[in-house]
Length: 325
Image (cartoon, rainbow, N blue to C red; front, side, top):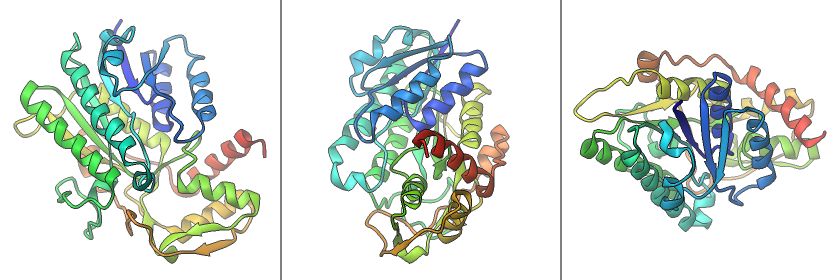
């Protein structure tokens, strides 16, 4: 029986994707290096959840170590690769740029080479980011928009991943799909994300830091909706277009929400009013994100259904249980 390789399996999106596949009866080979960008205890708790499924096998390794990836037990049996491992975070890329070169550039190339030489010639789904749009003033963001003016190194590495993938599709005929994620949130999320940081500070009675004086918008996308899109592109027939088997899709909620409204929803779910500290825009940040999801909807039936008013309470319920609040 073939398997699906999920890189970044101990990560937020990776865990949820792996769990959906396992629940559907698929074998999953998970890899992750459990780096120290945020506490490994959360990553290990996610892996413990996945380990309850008999079809899950995990290898702790760095995707930038190509020999380790290529020889991981069971990897040769994979007919699909879902590549979600990356060094995340826009602001952290200002502090530790070499982590992004290793994970997002060398690591992405390593996974491309793995897929290229794998016996079953797997289709590869990989994570890009809405950050590639930079300060694009046109909304909603379309896959046809120019993306050659990144405002962070993180964004630049994600655009480089798309270009490397285009080259491999043209050179080797590999089926490749890049997904530009838009502000994913939900249970088991990442501690560096705004919704987690805000919740933590509100519950502790500490002030929350609000950038650009609160004048921002984000296309918040609930994790279950994201997973449905990822799994569809991985398992349903490939929709080719153009002269290379490489597609790039936005995957978002298509409903941008003002930052101050987002904070109101958090306050309502937590049952407390936040103390607010207003600050200027931060380097590498953007005013708004807004996904045009027409292409993914037409090709794979992607239709997000979870509003922020529904999703945030689900996150807060999990967050309180995880933190023992």
